[in-house]
Length: 66
Image 1 (cartoon, rainbow, N blue to C red):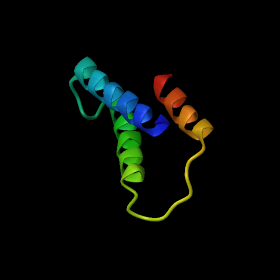
Image 2 (cartoon, helix red, strand yellow):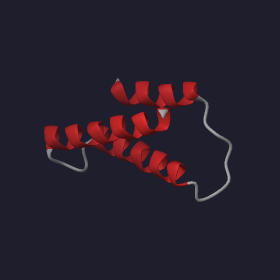
Image 3 (spheres, rainbow, N blue to C red):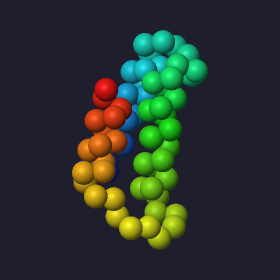
Image 4 (cartoon, rainbow, N blue to C red):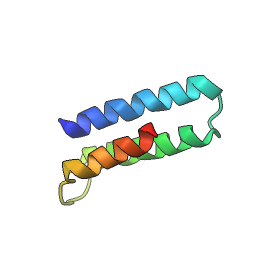
């Protein structure tokens, strides 16, 4: 549940950052896109990994919002 919310939040930030500057070289766009890509790959479950703690996901979201 929390991971799905984080992916939705990151997707909204990626879209908003692109609409704000209209450049894929805009640093906040790149940072948000990188974390969105990472969380989507984690969500796919391609390899066996330990689950992320919700505090870690909150930290990622807080880093994106600032």
